[in-house]
Image (tube, rainbow, N blue to C red; front, side):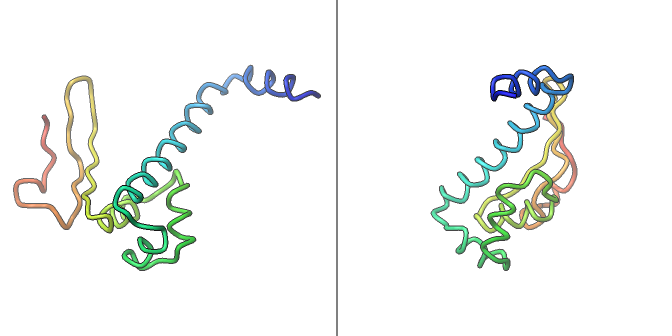
Amino acid sequence: MSLKQWEKKVLDAPDAEARVQEIEDELRLSANLTALRESAGLSQRELAGRIGVSQPRVAAIERSQNLTIDVLEQYVTALGAQLEVAVIQGQDRTCILNSRETQTEDSAYPVSR
């Protein structure tokens, strides 16, 4: 089977569009985490020291799709930022989580905007 034939077979599969979207989401997450770290002027080794993990663990975090909120929060907090998770429904945006270290009494509960 040639590469072109294989490519056509893969792209013609019923779930191909969903899988391509999944891969794009994984790449976007990885690129964004890496960009955040680099814009903070930190190497993977330096960030690892702040989080208390090894450099290979930071590399794994940056290429992982299945991150826990806790790991993502540690990563973002070590960059001097805060994590916010929101649900967007049409024009409504509801914050469902703020970084623990930056929560105030007013921000401890979800707020629709």
